[in-house]
Length: 541
Image (cartoon, rainbow, N blue to C red):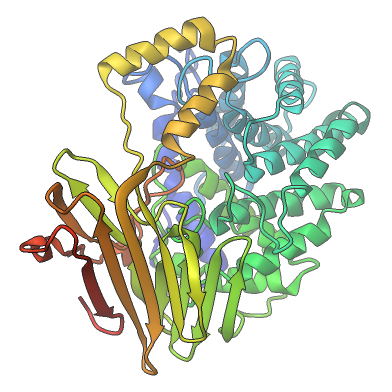
């Protein structure tokens, strides 16, 4: 096993971090050839038997196994291992055997027919088959064609650009494997659909906003598709996306976070190496954004559901690594307001502020090298247990002065719906009756409950960020329309998100920042009075 701390160079760090996750992926897989679930990576289904269907997304994990078999990375004990090759192929075969007759698969509930799970696992299967020389295999080829046909004809409700980019990339790979004639029209249609979702500022839409984390994946898929099909005109849109994300690579190398549309801390580096063949800026981004891997402070993506995405991206970045490297770019200067994305970056010597203006001015503040403060705004809990937050999309900037930023809005109820035994039974009954025929209807309903939309809470807020010549201060003002008597607790956290974004809410070392409790300030506060708290961001709370 590679020594994690012995990775002084970015390429070595990519190999070390990726290889460290391979034992986990092997633990998740049923590797017994005589088993009916041989190749399944959903341990909760095949081993614990606490799930009643296998998660189709999990079959994506075949791809990291194929890469481990194929890449002669430092410390890679699995390079050329015949058992690893068989386990990777078994993952593809189980994806085929567990799919619905139309080629689709499920992710979170039965008969879901989830486009994201289908696209990620198809992308993995195509790469795995290519890497391991699985050619002219009737079972695998029939599955690839069936799944691709389903994805080509399926269009999700809402805009998930990373899913659309996956589908386009799979169509391009299918053309290379089986011939372009059948897939070319769908590829052009889906590529055009994806490009129509790009904002003039450079970002691609994810549920109605800009998320640098997801954007890094979309960039990778655009760069890969452009390399296969330069005739599609994807390079300029990809370059604009790279220009946008460059603004959100922080001084410490972290990318995005809770102030952005989906609150993710993702960074997928492989596409920046691919794009580095024609964009000097792309590899410069990697040279800064890979610092957390070198310094062993990257976010933890070890969740059983999402770990594979990052592992194969790290391995691909190692394989695509370019020796011509411009080095990390200089720290930016001045201010940039992305009005469409409702994001603001303000750079001064020793103070780099990133704020989500539509998210209650949730922000991250850095000096020239490290995080000083992360702040996702005031949060309160009522005596009945409901949570109200300021960081759900819906606020607006009312003042954007050179040294003063004011954001106002209403607090919203955090999305906290959870399954109960009764709700689980209802969902299962729904899916085996109406839902199996109308899965998109159920998905839209669940997205409205868990992901999109908001319900206002009876609290108003105003946040003022002000530069005092030495550093930033923040002043929070909150008013309770029905008085403060029902508020049980109130304070500010640094890393809170309040929607069910699968890739969000991961651990990262800089989250070691305590909750700031304001509850004692409620004592004696008149119902019609504002709670006002001002803090100097240059000092610890």
